[in-house]
Image (cartoon, rainbow, N blue to C red):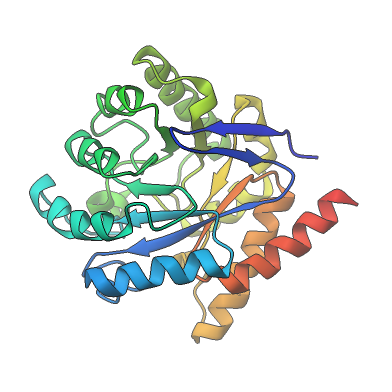
Length: 278
């Protein structure tokens, strides 16, 4: 059985462990790897967020800067230009928490002012460590994602030796930095960062050894959705591959899975949850 956690946010308390929570991806970027440009219009993004909540999402995670392999960094001003119109439309329109996928303290602060309750830092506090102070100031949730290097250098990185030991060590250090800046453990979750500087074959190894992260004593989030290591020739085949990875994540101890296709992955998660309960 997964350990039960109560993830404390400013407006919500998310119960984790009895049923897998779905964090639904809403990219408002022109260049994300799977749906770049599709929801860059604020009205379409707003409508899609409402649709994903209706389909069973427990959290909406909005990203305004791509972290796909080889992607270039953008300014805080450009990230906010994409993000603010969507947050303004969504303010007080959802019954579930909003997360914002950013490593920039300036972007995080504005997002939290506009009603976001979680910051999902893809860098695990390695790009802007003082981001944690902003999270603490707003009593927000913080997801610490393991990233090795930077997206623009991933292709040049060799395999990560002893991948689980490295991920656990780095995430534990990130938790320590967050605690030092005032973030309570009850507000944190950790993500091993599938992709994010790991070689293709190492992602399967991470899923197979996910239970090792339980030693950090924090909720575990996993984001397998549409990742390169699951890619197949057709969209439908990639859906099936993602569903398999979602189920494996849950059976390995994930409390939250980050997905694009909410309805389909809710079905996969429900089956995995039933297996755990039995």
